[in-house]
Length: 193
Image (cartoon, rainbow, N blue to C red; front, side):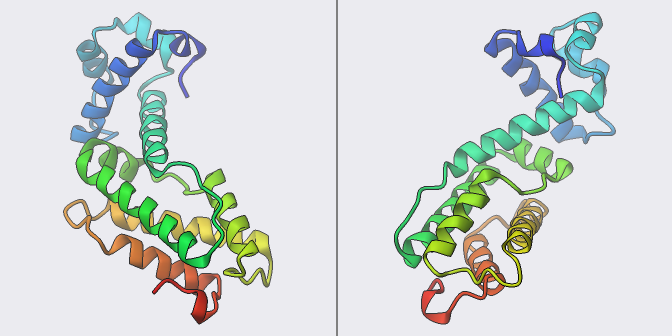
């Protein structure tokens, strides 16, 4: 992650540096992107760059974290719901918003595809708590295992989506809800229809 001095920069200066770096990493890839060219295009000196980042990998980590934060903002917070239908709709709506964001922001898609975030976020814990209360999730054999498996399914669907840059369409939400209902052993009458 960036060094503390980067966090002390004005938000507009941080955003400008990350925007330039995101464009380079998305276009050239993490390995082929030139740290020197990124900092030159961002208008900062090499000395300043090393006050903000330990090097190119550190800068990429900051860019990936920024892209993940934007994607999570598009997803929005989990809102407690009181019916199975509302839970499935919230999952589908979030998946569709994420797909639209990735379609409309190809640089974010490229960065996230290269970074491969693990998929676990407090949103998943809140979703699972809500699903358990509604009887959608069979907690056996172990809720910790179900949580890890849910995060893995979401990460896998995310990776599958990120790898299909030209195919981001309406199949994401039904695929995700189908896989989750099977993993959770959701009773048929509580599955998304």
